[in-house]
Length: 82
Image (cartoon, rainbow, N blue to C red; front, side):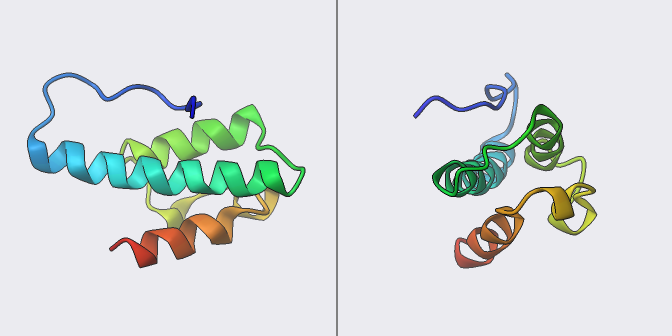
């Protein structure tokens, strides 16, 4: 699957890489759920999800949650893979 998110930055520790990949997989899950539901995420939502992947924000701080119907899928996925 081609991801809409940035590739892993160079120089991450193994722990940082693992944590970032977990967040990315959760975000990709939400994007897939939204696409299947017929409402692919806007560029703004992708940008906000990238901030989550990069560790800049938590899902609780995700400002566009109301505009992203698959937000709850990301939250659920994060809990399941914790």
